[in-house]
Amino acid sequence: MPGKIKKAMVLAAGYGTRLKPLTDRMPKPLVPVAGKPMIEYALDRLRAYGIEEVVINVSHLKEQLNAYLAECRGLTIQLSEEAEPLETGGGLKKALPLLGSETFFYINSDIIWLDDGETALDRLSRCWDEAKMDFLLLAQSRARAVGYDQGEDHLFVRRDNTIEWNDREAPYIIASVGIIHPRVLANAPEGRFSVKKLWLQALSQNRLFCLPHRGRWFQTGTIADIEKAERLLPQPAPAVVDQDLLNAER
Image (tube, rainbow, N blue to C red; front, side, top):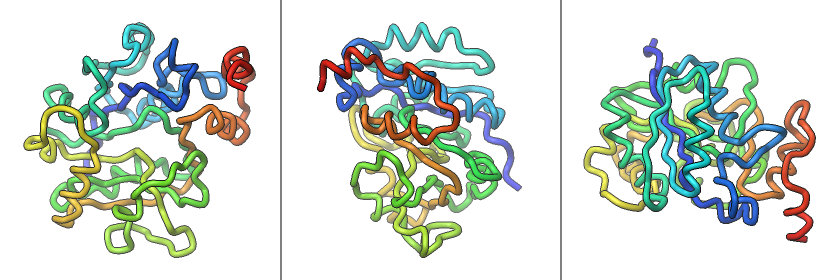
C-alpha cells in the first residue's frame, strides 16, 4: 500500500472575479460559506488526513490571506507569493521549490466536498501508483456537481483512465482535488498557464488517471453557488455573505 502523503498545495491566488463585489474587499478564499472561510474546508480535510505541510499561493489582497493563515493551527504553512495570479499551472510551477520532490495533494480553495465512507484523500492516496501515474484526479458525477461550470472535463475523465468508472454516474467532471508528482513541473513553462496543459501532456503518455468521488461536491465560485451550497451543507450557520453587498447587486 502507498505511503502517507506528507505535503499539499492549496491554490488560492485568483482574483475571484465571479464573486464581485465581495472580492473587491476580500480575497476569494476568505469569502465565508456556511459560517467559515471557504479555504478552511480544504484545510480541515488536510488536517484530518494528517498532512504535515501545506503550500498556499497568494496574490490578490494577499495581506488579508497572509494574516489569516498566520493564525491557522495544526498545519505548517508556507506561502508562495505571486505578483499577479499565475493561474493553476503557473502557480504550481512557481511553488515547486517549496513543494520539493515528493508526491503531493493539490486542492482548489473554492471547492467543498463531503465524504461518504472512506475519505476522498484516503482513497486517492490508496489508489496512487507512482510508477504509472503523474496525476490522479478526483472526479465528480456531473449530475451531482453543485456549481459546475461547463468545461472540457470530458477530455480528461474517460472510461479507460478512470478507476471505478460507473456508467450510471457518468459523465464526470474534474473535482479540483488530486495527487501530483512534482516531476511534471520540472520542465513546465514559467509564467501564467493552466494546469490543463500538463494534464494533456500526461494524458498523451497514459499517465493521467481519475477516481470518482463518492460523496457530495460543491464549487463556490459565484454568490449563487454559495447559496446553493449553504442549503445543502449540514447545519449551515447564519450570516454567510454580506447582505448589503448582495442587495446592492440586485
